Amino acid sequence: MALFVKQANQFNSGWLAESASGILAGMVVAIETNSSTGEIQLARADRNTHTIDAIAGLAGDDATNSSNTMVVVDPVYQVVMSKPARRLGDYFDETNTTRANWTDGGTAKRGVTVFSIGGEFASDQYIIDASASHATNADAGAAHTPAINDGYTCGSSGTDAADTGKLIYGAVGTITIASKFALARCTGAISNSLLPIRWVFSGA
Image (cartoon, rainbow, N blue to C red):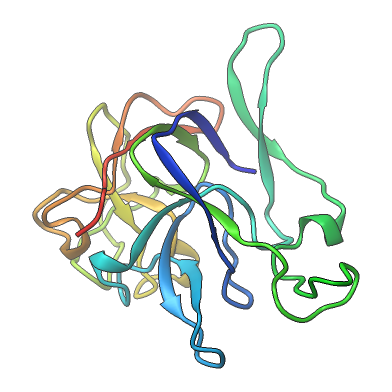
């Protein structure tokens, strides 16, 4: 888990993640249609391909077995920090899909929790070595030092597929997906690899 929930107004049990989604807790996720089944599924939000009405919220669970982290509380200083996570693959893999036999592959057996309306969080899924410099397909702006109330949107595959789903600084009014709403607002400096934010997007 890479998302620390300070306070949340609403979350849902979520939907199944698309195959090989790479979703990590703390990423911005979007709703898509599964091309085979026609059912709803979650994907990493991509400013290059998703419209603002597709944004579902912040992922509360992982749906991949790589680059996993978790938030732990330092017992002495009572601060939260992001640390590498080790998991038992079957219990952890959100895309291991047989509902009757958990050891078989197939279709996803459980959904990804999505925090969809309001709340305060800390996430390690952000980009600070660039900023959003185009409405859809570029994350080539200057490196960013977070400041209180800075607005964040989601990364674009137009620059790097690894940027999708991650929070990236983008001035409201210049980025299509944040032209009327920032998805999240900064509430302080990065601490122990975690960016503190308040989720402010509540739908198109």
